[in-house]
Image (cartoon, rainbow, N blue to C red; front, top):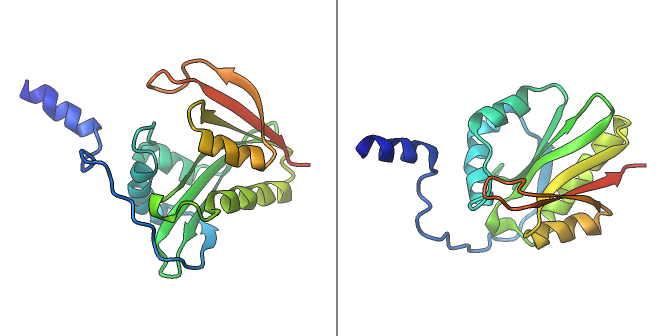
Length: 177
């Protein structure tokens, strides 16, 4: 039994048995910068906080994304260079982009940071003449769906049991021209 518990603990993030108490961070100016492999430890920590009940990317997935030439990655930082948001988008051979993940620290939410990141990504993609961007969002994540709808994304398909817990997702798309 101890072996099974050890294996379970290896795959389960630690330190989140209790619900996290969110205290809004002091207001500040934010900057969007490129995200590099140097920030991987910070991204891993923030990813777990952003997606506590969802499908967290592994260290290996983030390493792949950060080393893949067709991936654009950005971070939102405070004046103290604290990482408070991130986004990854992959461009495929057919000149379409896939937003793979976007996250903002809970204490920095409600400040338009995800919308700013999304707009920054779209501008970068237009400069590369990428015509379409797509993403998946949980059917139950109405906050994210509203963000994407405000940015003119359209639901094009519902995909059954997309997530590990069996939840459906909406496939959303936007033309960048």
